[in-house]
Image (cartoon, rainbow, N blue to C red):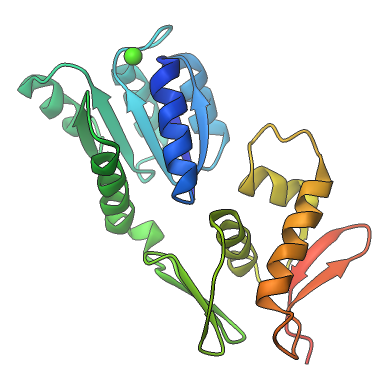
Amino acid sequence: MKILLVEDEAKTATFLKKGLSENGFVLDVAEDGETGLHLAREGSFDLVILDVMLPERDGWSVLREIRTRDKNTPIIFLTARDSVPDRVRGLEEGADDYLVKPFAFSELLARIRTVLRRNERRSEEFLRFSGIEMDLLRRSVSRDGSRLDLTAKEFLLLELFMQHPEEVLSRTFIAERVWDMNFDSDTNTVDVAVRRLRKKVDEPFSRKLIHTIRGMGYILENRS
Ligand code: CA
C-alpha cells in the first residue's frame, strides 16, 4: 500500500516514514503543498496524509484541488490547531479523518487502517491465487494452508504479484511500487528480493508459481 505524506517538517516526515515502512507501507514525501498536489495527481496512492500548514500551497487548497478530480482516495489531514472549525472544515472539504498534532504514531496507524478499511475501493481484504492466500488486514500469508513468514517488503512484493496474476511485471514496475518512486533502476535489488520471496513461497512446494521471463521481468503463473 502506497501513502503520500505532504509534510514540511523534516523530523515528522522522517519519523513517519520509518514507522510506516516498518508497518508495510511505502511512503512518498512531499515537502510543500505544490509538490504534494502534483504527486497526488500523478501517482496512484492508496492514501494521502496531508499537513495543513505548508509552504507554497496550504493543506486546504491541496485538499480542495485533489477532490475536484478524485473523490475516492482517502485523505487524513494533520492539524496543529486543536480547534473545532478546522476539523469541521477539513471533513466538509472531503477529508476522511484528521489528527491533531502532536499525535502518537499508534493513533495515526489505527486511523490509517480504519480509513483504508472503510474505503470501498480497497474492499478486497483477501487475495487468492493457486493456493496462496493473503489476508491484507491481518498481514498474513499462507500457501496450501501452511503459514508463510514474510518480511514487510516480501509481503508488499507478493501483494503486487497477487494483484497482477498472469501478467509480466517489469523490474522497473516492481521497483516503483515496492520501493521508492524515484528508484534509480538498481534492478539487482528486485532480483534479490524476488529470489528471497521464491525461497519462501515456491521452494517448499513442488508447483512453482513465480517465474522469470528473460529480458522482461517476472510473472506469477500456474503452469501446471
Ligand atoms: Ca507544517
